[in-house]
Image (cartoon, rainbow, N blue to C red; front, side):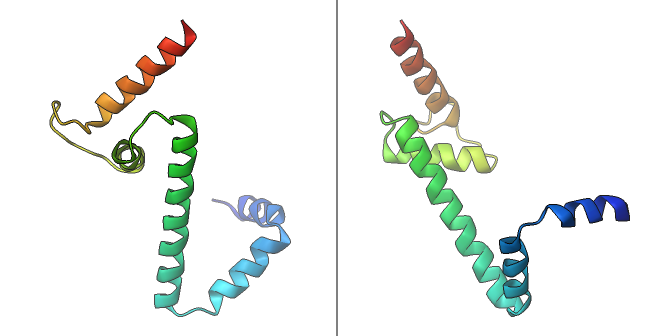
Length: 100
């Protein structure tokens, strides 16, 4: 990445971005990791909430497995009831039934 590219990115940062970077710079490495983990958990919960609204017919276990499958590689036996492929098929079937 060139200095020109970096300068362009920096020009796009909002005031809140600069304030957050200043705040993070004051944290210890442990506090930075903890902050990152909290933000990651909050983003995961927000994604699960979005899935619940979009697919109200999925069980809580299916929502959690879909989240896991969407964010990380998941390898489950084909016949496992929470296999991500089965969940995607359930979603596709439900959508197809709603459209017909």
